[in-house]
Amino acid sequence: MITFEEAYTIMMESVFHTGKEQVPFREASGRVLAAPVRSDMDMPPWDKSAVDGFACHRDDLGSDLTVLETVPAGVMPSMKVTPGTCSRIMTGAAIPEGADYVFMLEESEESEVGRVRFTGKAGRTNIARRAEDLYQGQTVLKPGHFISPQHIAVMAMAGATEVTVSKRPMVGIISTGNELVEPGEIPSGAQIRNSNGWQLLAQVERAGATGRYYGIARDDIESTSRLLQAALTDNDVVLLSGGVSAGDFDLVPQVIKEAGLKVHFSQVAMQPGKPLTFCTGDRKAVFGLPGNPVSVFVQFEIMVRPFLNKMAGVTEKEPEIMMPLATDYSRPRADRRAYIPVIMTDRFEAMPVEYHGSAHISSFAGAWGIITIPKGQSWIQKGEPVSVRQI
Picture 1 (cartoon, rainbow, N blue to C red):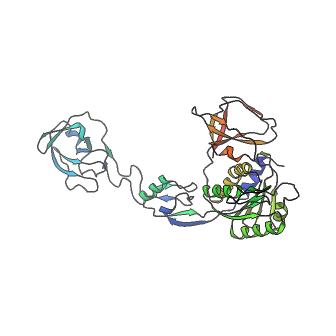
Picture 2 (picture 1 turned 90 degrees about the horizontal axis):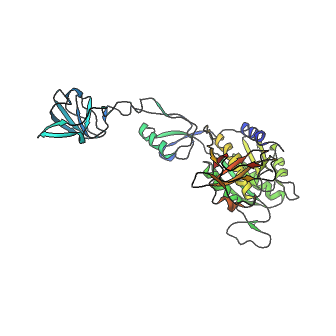
Picture 3 (picture 1 turned 90 degrees about the vertical axis):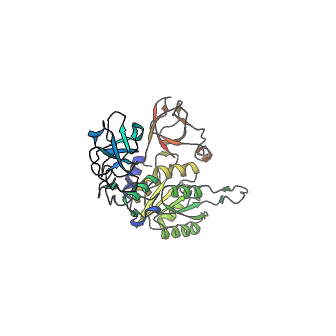
């Protein structure tokens, strides 16, 4: 058994990358940006008004001014502002030549038809300068992060209608065990429904990868080997749940070796999820996950998701939040690094949920995050800050 730190280092040093492709920007949400996005023009492209009001010479603020024209957004001004004149202007409209100040509509009064005066106190110019937000050729988005809706807006503004993204990692998912039936079936005798396969499929898709479910491998070499070979052929990464312990029917280690994969480790000092197997082949990676659903969930979030992210070129760190613990917490053994589900209270504290062990996946249904308890630590006092990873 190796430490979490050792396992994580081995795993991340084994990452291979997925490559790149171009996609229309409207289809890029949720993908990982793989090349910089640069603006094709200045923003704003000209000096523009930040308010509805009147564009004038600042030196004329104490005088009655003749209104030359009204400049709406989307129409360029046609007249030059000269001493003693102004133009009515709308928010976002281009500043007329000669104007260096815009006073707000609320700070004006009409002295006679076609003439206006400023009634406020002079302050900032209310002019947004050309290229104040962006200049032509400026990098507006850097590679290495997941693309969110706000990034789509920046791409649209920058004229980046085609962007370069990382190819999605392809992930094959296999559940193992004679006791499993699919969710649509009624279990009989010692059978249970297969939740791991479908949970993993959802986690894979949430991580920005493409998942494919290959079904249930029965507890025999032929069935397990057949599904593993199919998944390896089609995918970059294969996730197997169950069959990785030391029991008579735990066949995954044997099948992995027969497939010619290199086993890097098979046990990690983590709770839940000690029997974690990681192996690699030629641009292939296989994770043999435990059979209990909580172990599967945690191992994906802690180990598999970072692996997939790095494959896709993600450089931003997984966010962790420091929160005070809402109650005292203790555990009987501290020989492994532990992960505990928590909710966030109204006081923004982390409250451990009732949790009966690695088969108790329903405890995670209401969980907001998981906290990390380092190896060797058996007690956390109420109010002590803990690291929370949102799930």
